[in-house]
Image (tube, rainbow, N blue to C red; front, side, top):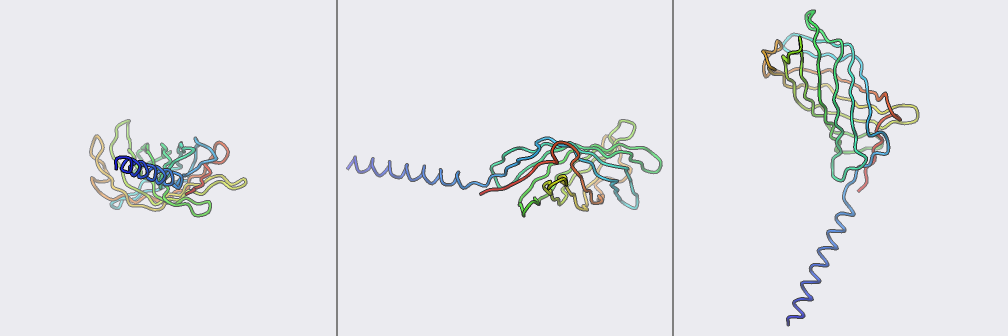
Length: 195
């Protein structure tokens, strides 16, 4: 009886290992055969909040994209800035961090959203804080066309920084759509997804 019990336990263990190996083999994997580090630029963005508007001349970002990610989502992290910004004649600088999370890949286009956190600075002091998520897509480079990250029009929350934000506290700020075109490397990340 003991031998049969041991044999049964051994068989259950082997079946469990086999199921685990099968699950691992069928796991979703994202692959990047392109750039793992890249820079990108966008044209003039604009923002509006509570009847006021802020404009900038351009935007830049620097990102990193992993070569392989096992899981349902794929994340690209980046930092960036908006250049030549002014509000009511006062110069401002805007520094942001981005986290694009791709949830699906349709052909050469990854869809998902980008978590955005920004600081608005004037005279080296952070006066406003912005945070939220923006629906986004990333288009793989093709031929001579570089990769493109598109952030859709979005409403984010703006709040006080180290001092009182002139745009309001816990108010909604609308970001215009932005199209970032990769300007370095071999054209940007090239994403594929396997199951």
